[in-house]
Length: 166
Image 1: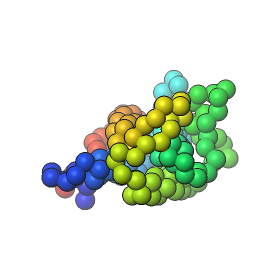
Image 2: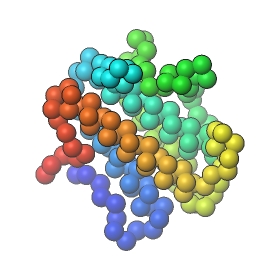
Image 3: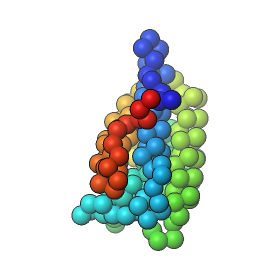
């Protein structure tokens, strides 16, 4: 069943559930596809479904863990190549990328759970940001890429939507 943002919950819970329901759609968009379909570059820039998952894992770690001084695993960012985190290298398996996303979600959830909405950290570009701002940003980021994933999935097999129709 698709998560629904509670109608009367507090701000932090509402933002978290909004993020989490989009995260679930990320995984749903991959359901039933072959490894070849997940890795296939679908746009002139090389965007693939699995590449978007890798990117979302990296930015979850970056925004939640690095911003608030928590440990993270090595991230696929490269100053020489701004799209490195969007590309799947030949040695990376689908299972590895999905596990990376799962670990990023767990790490981000721990930060969200431990901090208050007003707590602040330092963004990668040096500015002070609140957990509120990061949650809003990550809802936007994830929803944006879910939209990309919806289009890519439609190009692959015609499937569209943001949740299973019941």
